[in-house]
Length: 326
Image 1 (cartoon, rainbow, N blue to C red):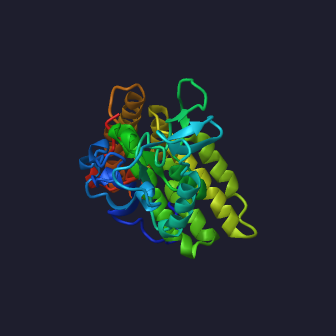
Image 2: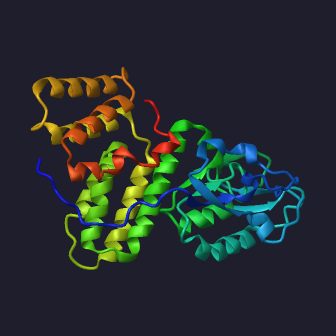
Image 3: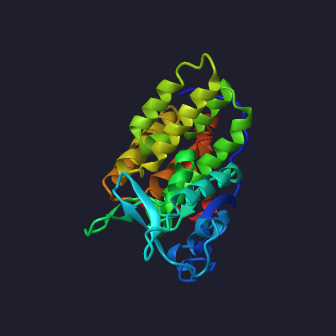
């Protein structure tokens, strides 16, 4: 495969990135009972990657600390946030208005970490209590979290509790650094820079989602007309695709594609060694880092600017040691 020189685009921002976060997760005593919730997030594992901008919507709308607890009441499709002791205390509209008021100040965020199970900030599986006497269902979303994510659908968002899972943690960090790079490129975006950006992320996207990879390719096959709506559709496809956790099959597929760039440079023994290592990884006999290390070794010997620009090799800062062994 011939070497190709990509159009220059701004580099990916370095850590730390600006991230929104539920204020209680920083340890601030803003919860309904006057406590914080720092232990609900793995701070040490994310050390150095992010700078946090905290929000507490309940305090933001004037509720006191401590205060009467609130909960979601209604159906999975239609619920309100009301007082536990006094259901007539409805805070839904105030929380929605607070969310909309904060959106302008979130334009530079690379992601958001929400407090789990919260009727204001919970991202998923928040309890919704029926009006009648029946068990609660875990089909709700915090009112503030829903307002933010509906307005900013491409902003990487995660539930704080899920970040204790090493796979989901790496996935969130990857999405945050991808989105931060997009934000840096966006002000000077044109057709050539859009293609250049995609060229850097195509193999990362392939590892996570073949359907998203194919959709992105079709989107960018015709760049005539106004680039802005096309770019917005593209970033939606990219971020949705990256939400899917990459599998061994997905990684092995990408590794095989990258191997193809070396076929004219490696002797038969080296090609066989790399092929065997990729197969062993696919079967679960080797960690991902093994074929990645050998690929990087060969590309240091036989540089390919296009391949070496791929974010797949370093989807987040390497010092974070996030890339999982499998």
